[in-house]
Image (cartoon, rainbow, N blue to C red; front, side):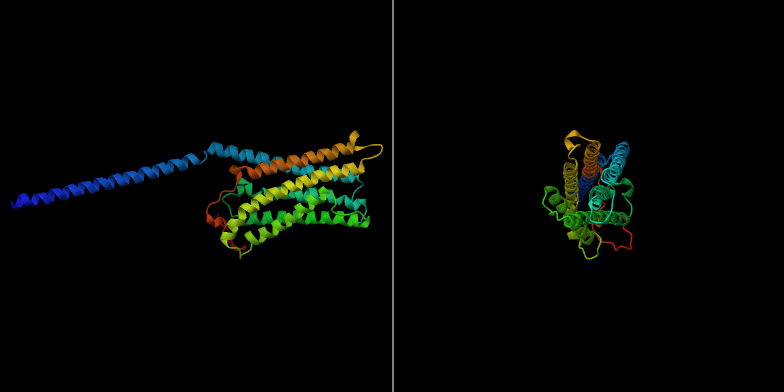
Length: 296
């Protein structure tokens, strides 16, 4: 009887052990299945090697096109003002005014656009980000200085000739673009390169900084296009009016087309999510002193 009575707990223990073992096996199987599903999802979201290479190739085609169009814009505006407008000087004459379109196109459009797409270059991904931050800031600073000197050229010329300043839509858009550019550069320097900026502030500033950068490029393009048109209407009168499309008018219109094409390619690069620099983690927003490396 004692043996029969003792057999019941044994069977119960065996049954309980089997149930627990079965449940653990099921749970382990469920976890394994979940991990497999997660791994499959990650694998599906990760681009294959051929598609990644195709994306990189398309980027470099657009990037080289952007560089080529930028160089063509600079050459075109320099030829226009040296061959048709008499060259350059800094004596408050019309020759000083010629610096204005050259410096604004070079700084506010071309250098600005090239500096904006630096982070999109695939060769920079996975490398120390600090040199590229400094290169981005340096290109933008040079572009800002050129833009300010270009504004000084036109203001000085207008003041010498007693011509009103800031009366046209072109001048309003241009001064707004330059002012926003200066604010953008100072906020970017303080928010992303200097040590007192907290991570939360950087996370807040980053999307605003990106959106504002594209908006300033649009404003710069509109300012340059309206300025070219305004200049051609002012100077092409008499025997060769603008409406007759003399060679200078063709060159000016071509410059406008090149500026628009450059802007479209640069904005295409900036808006393509495949070409955005991957964010490894929150370390992307964390501050690293300027003399130390960022391993991202």
